[in-house]
Image 1: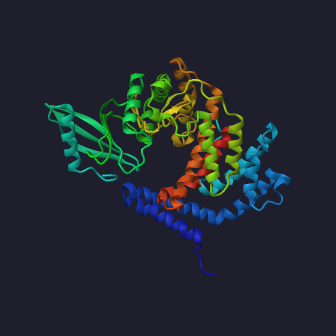
Image 2: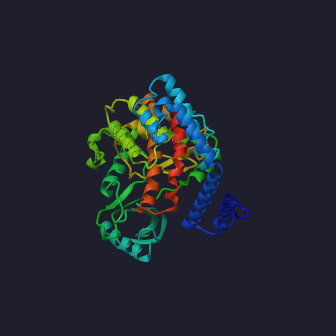
Image 3: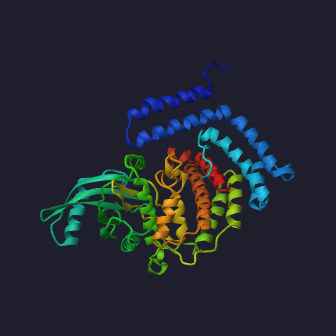
Length: 123
Length: 335
């Protein structure tokens, strides 16, 4: 087993170096690419730390959406997507229930990809 | 000259072409590239003749790139819009000969002002009421643009599928869903809602710009000066144009002002209606959801282009990770 820093720590260092040192030292397309690279390194760092929990929670929520219809599905996400596309949440009560659960799934993805983005209430 | 700074050759070529076109000696100087995207090259230059100097904007479509809209047709649309009362930089010349500058181009008057979103927002923040003024001017511009009947538009503005606006938009969503490398339950849910709540096809399709937003407008302290970037214009549903301005992405985190981070929907709506526009609230909401989903699916498409090697780019590589933002926005709109 290697010594710390962890893979996520190392990626955070990469992100900081890009943001603090490379971005100010570059201009134009190279600067933009450095900024994007820093963001990607931060995303991957969060995925390494949060990914397993987010995926486990997603599975749980997908099962809650799909119920018995997806019990034996090979690919839960595909099964739920097909179910919803073909009208499983057409009634008003299902619309609200499923919409809320889907929002929880997406909040999980956002906690990795863009923390803080989920602060908008749609108004 | 795609993606590179214009050289003295380009200025010389332009001088010679303009001299022929205008029948007087024209000298082009101070040719400055302002943006060189994958699809078009924009520059500003000064043209001097008979003691007068004027600043112009050059829009050139590199020959090798994909043209969304033929240069001559884009110029026609801009001229139709200008005649209808939409602020558009006036076009002076159109050249479809690709040999002059490595691609067809047009030349319009240069309009002073801010276009970069954060500078637009800074200018507006410094002046009370300016955001409302600009929002109302956008609403008015749309009301004028949408008076142009389908019959006067170039035929290339009709989508290739030949489908009417709503059916076309729905087919794009299903196509985008089927191309995803990993399913999106959120967008599948939205697609079903869009299908079940689809409005009737517009009874009077018009020219729509399709990309009016903070970033495609020139503003000054007096308000809206011009609407730019007409390459995506086509025949469509007027409410699509109005809905696109509310995308959360164009607000730069100023969520309390849904129009570009500087204006309210009330201002947009009342200006549109005051100038004769036929506002349809249900249709407005439907398009807001549809455009959010379509943009999210487009993000996933960018990453696929990177993955399959057809357009390698670090920016595009991570685009699919942004799809969650659009999934969230679409679900919020369906509360």
